[in-house]
Image 1 (tube, rainbow, N blue to C red):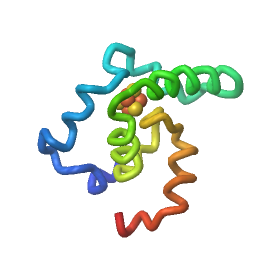
Image 2 (cartoon, rainbow, N blue to C red):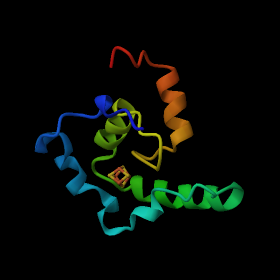
Image 3 (cartoon, helix red, strand yellow):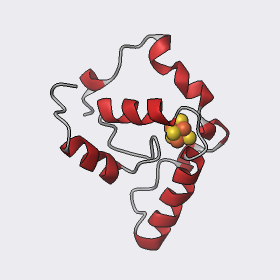
Image 4 (cartoon, rainbow, N blue to C red):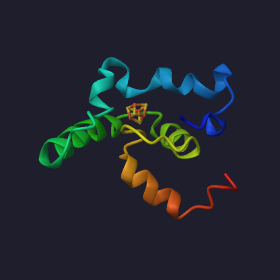
Length: 96
Ligand code: SF4
């Protein structure tokens, strides 16, 4: 079961940046890859999602949300889950 204690409080200010995301006109499946995605197909899908993130005006907010919530799935803020794990490994996540 997901640990919800890491999520920001459910106030509109915590999430309203998402309305400005460049991904709002894309399908969720383009950012949350199928579990069976592997190899070149997975890389191509992640690259396509990251390309959208590269145009996004709220990329910093998105990445910080994903890091603070320790989002385990999907492309957020131009990063894959593995990339976020590497970033968090360099941070004191208990102090966040
Ligand atoms: S950074 Fe990427 S995932 Fe986050 S809101 Fe922008 S386009 Fe969407």
